[in-house]
Length: 143
Image (cartoon, rainbow, N blue to C red):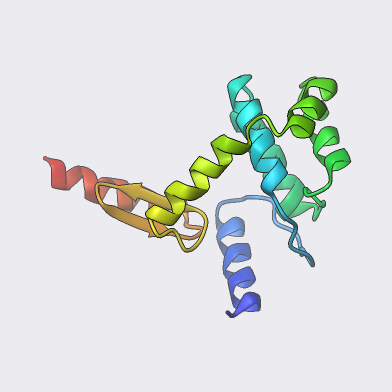
């Protein structure tokens, strides 16, 4: 794998889309962040949570594998820290994330993000124009 090349491509796409993207030096396990995202989504905070995690991980280089870091981020969104801690301690959404991972294996996902539509997929960080083109091509096939 060409990690420096992948990071350069991600940074380029982020710049094109005006997304925050720092010079991250480490990769952290996002499993607990994924589990907490299911809870945030159920509370109606999905987009805000995902934006905050993106910024924390990709722009600020924060270690989202650490529970205290996750709690700070969720609390900054107005979500209850005690409830978030309970969700993490009990691994309440473990099975839901396991099911997502199983679906990814069945679909042969090799990178994130991967977008699916009508049997085709678009893999990796893409510009808005590439996503728009992907959708338009699939919509044109249906007409």
